[in-house]
Image (cartoon, rainbow, N blue to C red):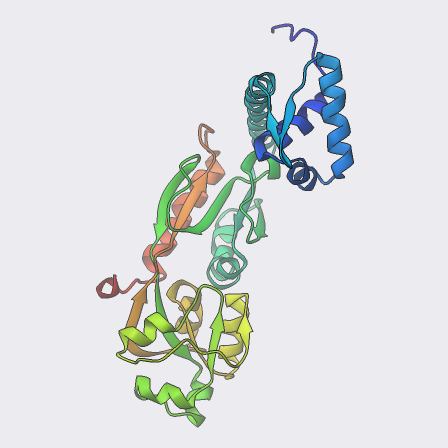
Length: 303
């Protein structure tokens, strides 16, 4: 093994790398969960120990000096390599543990109703499911695989197209017993539920209706909550087929009309680049892709 030689303060180097990568003292403080002054002090300490300025100022912004850019590049590569190695060691130390991250709505509506089958087929494993709207870092957050909903793949990671999707209109059988919804025009007298990223206007246009986006009623920032509201018979909802799939199978929701609208975003199966997948991750990948074949069926005519 090589002798690393004299190193600067590693905590100060980590703080500096974050500030350089993010281009902001405040952003680095937020990422590292410390104060703005703590970041500034660590950077000043590093500058004093090296005898060179790492940051200058351009108006109210901080900018890297030439020495700062050189150190930032080396620090980023070294810390990234260390994080990747740590991640690999953690994986090998826990071969029966898998950490999966995805959005709250996809976790609630698509993944959790199915994942029990995978767990039952793999005695002794532990699945750590992190549902969040944030894009987590594999090495920093200890994540093995992510299922992300995006227009384009993450080219910095290994991304495989997982699933297309489309939008459709659904309601509960209970709601339809008391409300007429035989044609799209009948929706004028119905309660239309709304959620983030699920706008009605494109569907109205596809149905030949010159209607504006609804602006009354309850609006949800979580599609899973909106679907639950619809299952409870509180209204009609425009939703992604992937999220409604389980409810459609169970009969708690039924599709209205044959009109669908393709979704620009697609689901991607994402894993760290240049990291050999564990046998458990390989089996999970095979299982989850097999679920798309036997699970949600995308309306090809709508794409």
